[in-house]
Length: 340
Figure 1 (cartoon, rainbow, N blue to C red):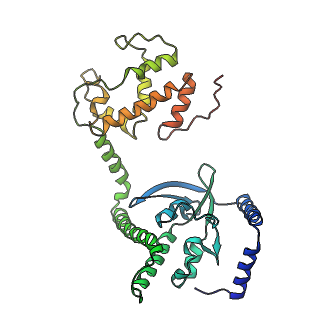
Figure 2: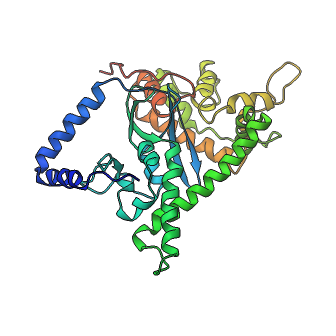
Figure 3: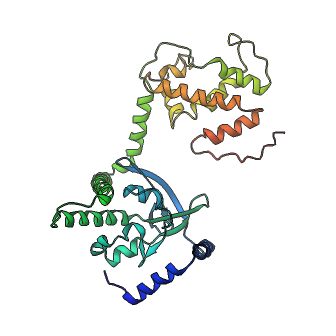
């Protein structure tokens, strides 16, 4: 890496040390305000994926730049979610992010890496503030740590300093994980399998939830589920042996089967055997597996009942339900309900 003028660098550091903490905070605040007041790119696509045990949050900007969010970028490198107090996530020395500032890493850093690890500020899909790094730099930063490791092992000491052990282990796992993901992605793209793999993944989830045949009937919906519906609707509860209003069947589909897991209701209705008249031969919950399906249903029902009990009105319950257990692909209600 080309070195800057040592005198200028030393002078810059001296000026930084001479500033009071209040002045540094004021400068940082003004810089932040200026940064977010100008036009910044917008993310049109957002999502996440896993590398080993680490969940990586990503975005694609309108200029097709791939972003890995700042927090998950750091976690993937074995760093804490935030830097140590006083350093600041975005603080740099000689244009380097803090995770590359160690002097021992300098021999392995080139100008291309410096350019690719500058923080990128963008607007998220919902209009929030996002900060991240170019996705390609994650692999390159990990390689710097591994080059440092190799140099340490080949040195007279023959070992890696303990303070870098966690980061080097994370970098090694990261490179291995990226290699595995990369070869799978190449095969999927070359064969066209990428167009159907998400459907296969969804099918695996559904198969884990659902049985092939109808299981023996057992009571799975507690009375409290129906009692709370009747209370919030202002209806008289006379027990389950009396036929409830037809609307309750629709509420069950809405509150439970449309929200339990993606695609569950559609798959249940597809697998449910029919009579000659076209009616279901059993209850939808009879198709759930004992090890995954029924525990998931029970947990979901407890959550719904808890929201009902916490609600004073039907409108309040529906609002909280949509916020806590939204249907996939639906727009959340805005909390403008007057509950006086």
